[in-house]
Image 1 (cartoon, each protein chain N blue to C red):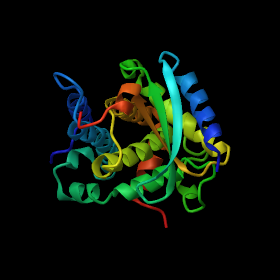
Image 2 (cartoon, chains in turn yellow, purple):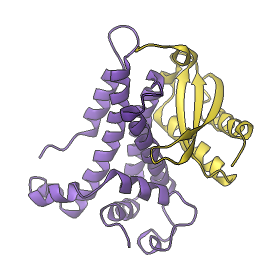
Image 3 (cartoon, rainbow over the protein chains, first blue to last red):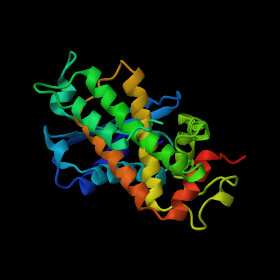
Image 4 (tube, each protein chain N blue to C red):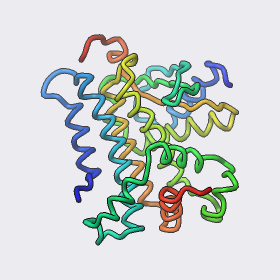
Length: 96
Length: 168
């Protein structure tokens, strides 16, 4: 099981190399439980508002695969849920 | 027969997260993520059953029977399995000699990820689903289907055969 710092470093490196055209504000990770009740990881890539439209599907898919491959190769067995958000979305409340 | 067109599901998902004004609501972001998963789910099953029963037999009851035989859990487990560096022995006789190629394994990674997101979108009220994440879930699902179609026929057939006939 890798520590949070290492997980974030891996995710940051993979995201930066695949999402070169996007400004990545930060990357965070936290423990989660997957839909089957197993321990998992939630990795959040924080991007600048509106930049999701500049990320194409191949880049997003390569980021997902790259993060999962790197984590597995370093012995991390938890499933990684990779998600995106902007700072505005992270601080938003209510139903919108 | 009314097979869901994946392009229509992607289009629906895109509309849900693009309200005329303001941010989309949770009741729109969540089904957008579900639609992205279901696009990949239905496209995959359609490809499998078209191979087994035949595209010209889509109006036959046996087509529907085969279609309903695939479960989400098996699709997930199969996709997890083929991402392993060493496949379990029971899978090996049915996989390509050099294993599954990166197009298939990337597709498989997207299936597992999107199924997990779909589950959260449908059931987990403790997390907030974001528009940007939904937009990239849609884009990821589209890219994954493209990768699947780019894989060679033997690769695709090996995957689809395992999907319809779980090895014992």
